[in-house]
Length: 264
Image (cartoon, rainbow, N blue to C red):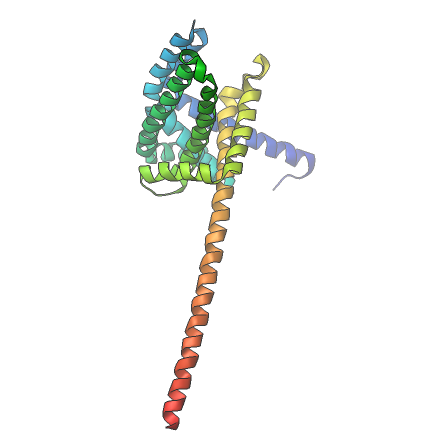
C-alpha cells in the first residue's frame, strides 16, 4: 500500500537518496583506476606537475570513467523517462557492457580535445602574455566541450547510431541549443560547486554529485529531444495533410474529366 502524507514524503526522499547513492557508488567503483591516478593532483607542487598528473589519468579515462559515466547516464535515463523503479545494478552493468566500445572511442576523442584545449590555454596564459585575453576563449570552449560530452553520454544511451554520428550530433545539439547548454553548465556547475565548497559537504562527491549531474544533464537533453520529436511530428502531420488535400484535388479533377467524357 502506498504511503501518504508526511511519512509518504519521507519514504520517497529516502528512495531517491538510495537510488542516487547506489548509482554514484557504482560509478566511483568502476572509475577507481582513473581516480587513483588522479589523486596525486591534490599534492602537485606546480602547474607542470598538475598537467603531468592529468595526462597520466587521462590515458586510462576512456577505458574506465567514460564507460562508467555512460552506464550512470543510462540509469538517469530510466528515471527521467518515468522508470524510477528500474533495477539499478542490472541497468548499470548491462549498459556498461553494451555502451563500452562507443563510450571508449568517444572518450579517446574527448580526452585528446580536452588536452589540446588545456595546453593551448596554458600557452596563451603563461607564454604569450600579449595574447593573454585569448586564454579566456579556451575556457568558453572547454565549457562548450563539456556540455557536448554530457550530450554525447545522453545520446549513447538513447540512440542507436555510429560513434562519429553521435559525436557530431552532440556538438551540433550543444551549439544549436545555447540556452539549454547554458542551463546544463549552470546546474552542473552549481552541484559540483556546492560539493567542493566546504569540507563538510565533500561527502556529496562519493555518494551524490555524479548521479545528480547525470540526472540533470539527461533531463535537459530529454527536454530538447521531446521538443524536437514534437516539431517533427507536427511537420509530418502538416505534410500528410497537404498530401491529402493534393490527392483530393487531383481526385476531383479526375472525376470532373471522367464526367465530361461520359457526357460526350
